[in-house]
Image 1 (cartoon, rainbow, N blue to C red):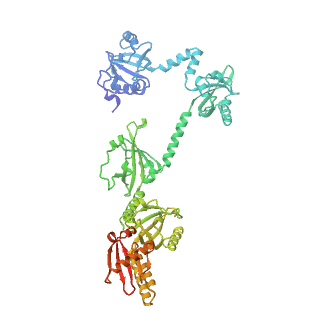
Image 2 (image 1 turned 90 degrees about the horizontal axis):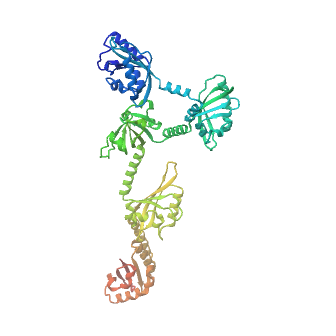
Image 3 (image 1 turned 120 degrees about the vertical axis):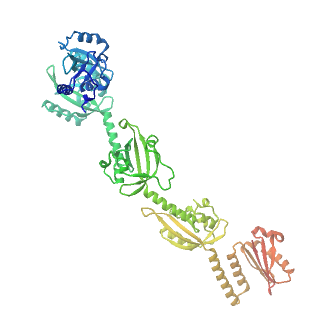
Length: 629
């Protein structure tokens, strides 16, 4: 449909081949064409009215033409229209101010003709040009040199006139003075332009002047102005050759583009940062269509940027919640206003899936008037898989019956190696709470009977970062000996450097004590068969009992004299001998005599024992006493 076909019906330009030709002609010419009804209401406008005055046809048709005229010119226009004979045109054009759609006034030179009774027009035809700029230029040209200088001085751009051959400044406007770093343009008059340029740019200036003299058309050049206020400014300058008072001169005009260059530099820097950043960056408009993605995003999703620009996000992926997420994600419109952060499952068009960490932030920018979003995506699939493996491994470690210690690889010498992790089984084994072990040295579990040879083997394996398995004697928090089967393995990082050791411990105290018991029994039996001295047999018997029950104390006497006893009883040996003699004197049988130390022998309770078994030794006038808990 043509633009004029949607106009309201009127009494002119009836549908005919002639009217169609007139309409087409009116739309093609650059000047405005307005046709008025006899009551001066607007019945037709061409497209130039929209171009020059900013009005759409719907906003001006059927309105009074006087609503467009400046109030001060109502009378002049009415008189002019009244003086025109019907069907005739005005002898002179009429200058009138017409209101622009933005509220400003534009000066038009209109030719007006009456064609109210001439088909197919049947109206008053006004046509003309916008001469606002022409009148302003004419006004400026008519002013004197002072007014001309005022115009130059008000210009925001640098204007400099310099001698062609020497480059001496003959004129500089205030905008140029600010660029040169002075407050008064007179301060730079007759100064050479080269004073404000670097040595490298002197050649550029003289070469461009020669090219201008040769009549070549040059593009603007950028110079660095080393101003007197110690600021370096970048100026984009164009020049022409002029002649003034018989002297060949160069008129240069340009703008300070320092801020623009800095903005361009910042923009390029940000673009490079976005291109090099490890996260995928995607920018969308309000509808979710992609308007930018960086190289990382293109690589992550396996696309070329030009393939997905203006495409919906679903062209890259379909977002789904992770299996363990029970909540619903907000809608896209809500996300644009509030932003969103979380983890999602991205299902790609090729069927591949990835777990990603996503942040979505709303954008507010003049270029995105309808809104948009900045989406930053990080692929965390490998991390999630590693976390899952660690979770399973931790579950195994926490729930295993074996005691697990993780040790630092450095330092190995005392006071190291330090414990960095202990599972709950360590507490059951050693009696230490996990928080008591973490940060302490492994040496806290060693004691006086821990075999030095075994420890040497352990330290050497750790220094060589080798796996080792051995049996070692630990001591619990209460001081009780614990035999453990220890398996130690190094843990390395991606550079194959050992950072930690994992030590698995299994309690083998029962097996070791059974082995020792069988060994000691065999030795005692051998001593008896060899008719060894009684003291030798009793000494071996004391060792057997103390090995099996570390907290028990043993005393033996033969022929009424102390023979063998536990080292801890050395101070009380004579007292024990005297008391046992008293007890044996009243005993008339050879069966063991139970004694409650808490009621009959309280001075021995400080050894941590509460009871005693006393066996008379037949034929030796001796006895065996075992003090137990």
